Image 1 (cartoon, rainbow, N blue to C red):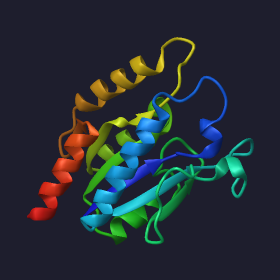
Image 2: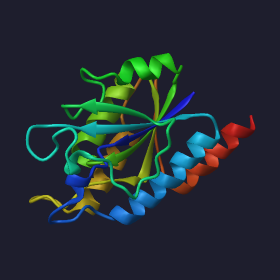
Image 3: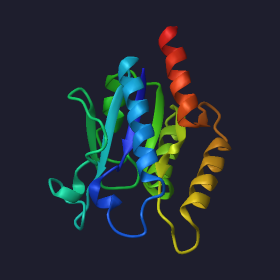
Image 4: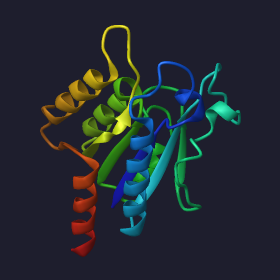
Length: 183
């Protein structure tokens, strides 16, 4: 079973300046992959960060971006740390659904996306990172493009004895999902 994680694509994280890198393109690619995952029998899990400032549960900033397509069958997980596995229902949901492969998308590349990818790999999940479906914003020391490129390279080169992290563009992920559904 395949699960798509859509991490922290929340209204409050896309407000203000500087903007998130390629936000509209990232959203469009996530929607395409989510549709393919659903169509091939996988599960889609929206992960929402909550804190005591701009991401308070139930407030407008905490909500998932309205441009993302959601269905009644999609699942959700709330978290308070960068790691989507840390003290959340995510490990149980993945086990309950027999998930062995995880596709990762979302925000922010250098925080919650990175931490979740590493946590999934350390739990021996095979991880597919969608290279062009995660985003961040410019930081004082690096621009968003450099951060995204750096993390894509790092994930692809992690040394893992029992699992694998693949970094693929959305077009290749969609082709891979189509091939998986034909087996």
